[in-house]
Length: 482
Image (tube, rainbow, N blue to C red; front, side, top):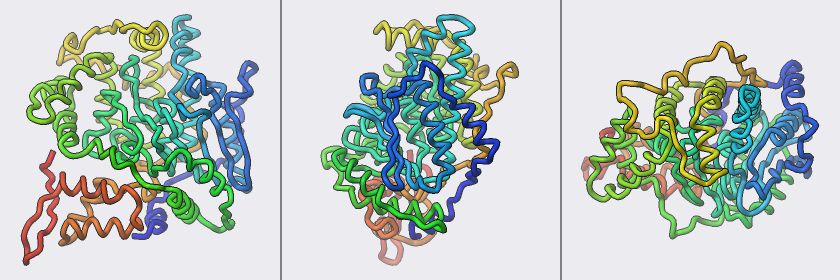
């Protein structure tokens, strides 16, 4: 199916910003007296509007001052006929955005109830921005060049275009600081194939460079040296008033593809083959003890990985591990709007919990091992579901009022990235095809987009077997394969 047709079929319910919502945006993102005037830089070039996170010494960690600036500018551009495309990027060569400024939040929490209240307000502000991005009515492109973690993922993962480079380092590191994967992770991690999202959420494992692209976290892979030229080219694009969003995205997608110069041959797909099978075997369970037992039982080529993963899990906050696993299971049923509303209540509970302030203080400020409460995974009674309280709605906490009613249950405009495992399964199951025919189908549909051959081959090798039929070797999807 042509990309534009696919995009038209994936239209989301994206509410236009009403007068009331515009007024709310002005109030929510109103600048404060102590905001740093230089922590975010904005630029306009023809129809392109750029946002540059400008705290390179802090790896562009995002704080309230930055959120207010970005939110107010996005709300302004949303209504502007002059703004065609939005690009967000980070200053310096090291990071797009390493996450939220959690050290400042931990210090606030140490001040008592008033400090905790301010920390909770920060998350409310951040989630309003993330929801605005996820339901934005204009093409939004994230240059994930460098470290992209935590809050930086919230600024990028919900965009229709997410560009990884050789410098990209992706992770959701929250369980290591006594928190949970937030900024919409309840939505995007459970929707990753198999148990990959659960694995990344629980272990905080990192993906680098092309593997951010192979995994579907990024939609494109470019060399970092190509980004300035791409940005200039995007500024030159012209759209007619009657061009719909699907047409604009198709044009932008083709433009980005012009700057793709190939994938490094020395970095094969990481979350594939035997490792991917082991991830699905071990992280598909619904309880932490069951995952631990599965890792302990691993034999063969995946045993060293399983042993290292056990060590990793035992270094994380036991509370965070249990909460995150439950989050991965129930988040799959949340819409994007529900996700941010529910995560807001979860974040508020973590601000009052020992492990967040302890984890951030230990790991990031004092550079020591944290002292969790409870201390170890084995200290938790399997019959005691300590995660339940984090998913209840606190009636004393004012509901999170988002800036629009925009909502959906699956990401719109998925045709811009690599084929997903479910898409390959559909093609295999819908007709009699050989593995080569399935591969050729996707190469033709995507106009030989880079990465398609590698990803589709890996999926076919792992998830299909061949059946002889009329002298043809027909691909058959194996639902039992893990």
